[in-house]
Image (cartoon, rainbow, N blue to C red; front, side, top):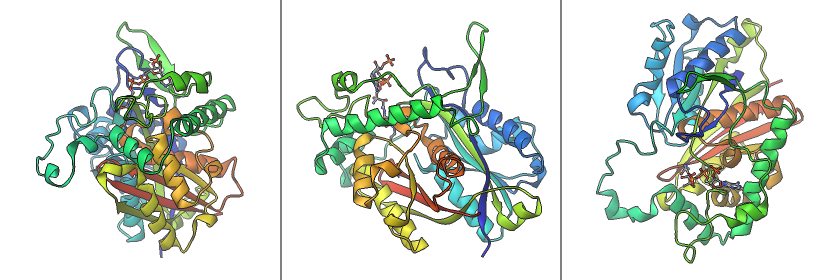
Length: 390
Ligand SMILES: CC(C)(COP(=O)(O)OP(=O)(O)OC[C@H]1O[C@@H](n2cnc3c(N)ncnc32)[C@H](O)[C@@H]1OP(=O)(O)O)[C@@H](O)C(=O)NCCC(=O)NCCS
């Protein structure tokens, strides 16, 4: 069977989707992807744009400036029009669906070289922009229970996760991310992006806007629940939820034999991937069945998994997913997670894969298996297991 390797993985810094404070407030998803395309070809001169078999981009809300995101960005960068582009939509796992698509294509012999990732701009294209919610869903589910924050509350209630547990998990995400930035861990994966603001001033954004190294458990404890009134809430707040963000990530996935023939280096190969469906009113538990399925396909158990990147949509669902998978928290999100770094929906499946690739290249050279997993709006989960290749 053909093997799929990660030849490179990069991402933009992740900015807050805030119309005054957001560091990316004057740029959109195609701009972020364009910065990554330029950088990834410069970093990998042996790979020519015309030799790419597909540009696969995940994006959760494919409307407005994100409509036709894959093809239009590629063409807008002046890259060869002979290269096909596909946009993937699986809500928060859109980029992971794109990764699975490219891995499947390589294994099936459809191509050898894929540029794959995701982008999301939650400032100019808000969650559910232009969405018409189909009324028939209401026959099967209570529409009040479907918004993401409500699902986080339901998961916390069902598994009896309390506010201090959620805040502690979120606090640690900030501490780990702040420390990783301080120690320069993200240097190799983050590509600085130059932004021109409304008044013509320019800034090179070279770090994530989200991590709050100075936050405290006391400050986080003061934040009010945002999705339910305090007496009905388990305590899902702005502090223990992922924020709204802008960001993009990109990887070169390649047939191993092709990478070897070009003399390219890599350290991870695709072991297995899986998606699964769950009750949409508890969408946050999606990592449980999808990771279990991926482990079963790989012939592994949770004890074999050395390092995990689980997308922190909310603290409650991350805590429950890890607990049910039997994976200790100290194996997960070693450089912080989505609560601190940010969760630009359709980009996150690629962002966590890029970071897993970096972690297994540097801090965890001893790790054999890495799992990347996310929950997905409307009740799904996605997971990929990567194995050390060399
Ligand atoms: C939870 C949510 C509604 C909060 O929105 P918001 O109030 O605009 O949140 P912000 O991130 O701007 O934080 C608001 C304020 O809370 C405070 N705050 C947030 N996190 C904090 C922390 N860790 N420590 C201390 N204060 C904090 C700050 O005062 C902050 O304002 P400031 O930094 O501008 O001064 C929004 O982030 C959200 O919808 N998140 C979920 C997104 C989602 O569903 N994604 C998909 C998942 S599947």
